Length: 625
Image (cartoon, rainbow, N blue to C red; front, side, top):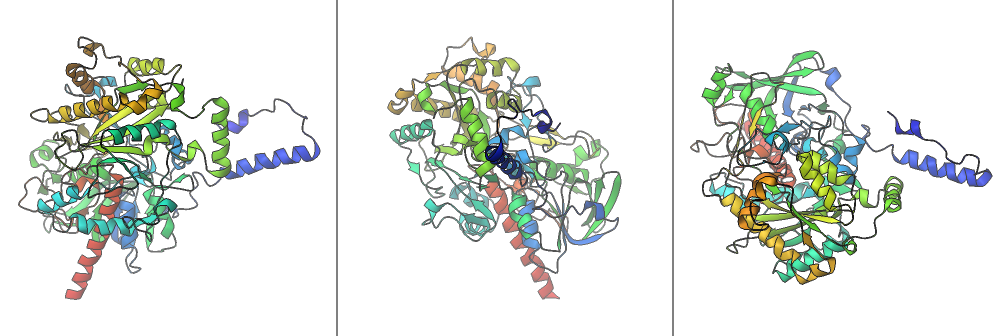
């Protein structure tokens, strides 16, 4: 329904002449300002209706997310290569474009709407014991619905990849690929040499004007965690306002940065609402030759002269490989899938687990003035000037990296923060639904929030020891896969103890002198199973962790990169699938170990590095002829 149909004038005829003309000018300006939001005009025309059965391309890229858009951009630099991008979703909505509405996109048509299998060890306060795993089913993939934080991780992350046998993935190498895709636009960072200027992805940052953000940083400094101007991969401990993939108050997804910006390239084609069922692989030669794609009621076979590149993400990529006969032999045989290559696809699933149960009540001086008129003013600011709170993500851009064991310069916990205005009727219930909390859990949070602002400290487990796995539920490509998160399954309970260390640090922050002016009060969640324990005891917090820990949407590792002699790997260091020619995986699923930070930036880096490697490999083949 069009909201404008319900608009009425409560006081007709009170503006006449020039005053009426001025008011109509304002209305017309506001109406016109919404036109660019959710528009398909910046992007390539949808090529799907023009596709024909048997059509041939040089490269077919499956998925337009954080990696797929980047690798397609890089390959299409060669005007002699015809590149097709297949995306199962459509164009991003206006809601996707508005940064402040990021939590409104889950469980819409832009979301694959995945959920994990129930577990006895985690997610005990979630409906049906399941963790909701939102993934982008839209042009731009998950970069069209994530929190737009650009965090690269630290030097150790990538150096470890290299020591695991992945040649060329050490920090000094990947750092150059990060810089190549970046376009730094923050004036206060002009002197920085850590970020690139000539790439396609604009990077901006802002200091939140919420008083509580300043307080958090002051407390961090007292606890020996400095405030950082920028991410420092060599010495990454401290608090900072992370870079954002936001420009001019609008989200910049990977598709907007890397596809829309080169829509003039005639050799780069994008097909939307195009669901890839299977990769076509010649069993005798073990060469990937094409894909089977469903577009509305048509089933097409499309072919690639050079390569198929799977960039469907850490859930869809392993699912597609297994449906195509690449995966654990016993599992595929059970489902009647013809096995082509026995590889540990779907194993090594890693994720950044977060705890959503550390809530603090504050007094009103923690926030700048907020009331209904102010919120209307913010809506006006956004649609008129793309400014105000809707053009930002509040204090969610403030992140802190700490080491709970004090045994390294590298972090094991990352803090995110969410602030709720008093009697928050939008964000708080929306997050409760998005996370899948049971109703009574969300209701308790709302009860606490009636009169005063509440703050969520969200410790994030950066280096999980627990691994999960992804299996096919059936051999039907339209059936959602089976996802076992593996949360808290590690031997020795290191994961839960590190998160407990994060909670203990959050307590120190709240009890520090800078916080006293906000009258903080740590609140007890509605968890009857944990009420047998003394509030804030180790036993209580561990019980709460098993109930209220869930995903930060950073799934990785399910098509692990490693040398051929690593029996747990799926692709080699050039991202080629072991045992199959002309097939690569290019997305977060190739991470042998998940990075120590938000995954959007590293996945874009993977896309850029893959594009360079693929170009090198085919230039080498040409030179050999």
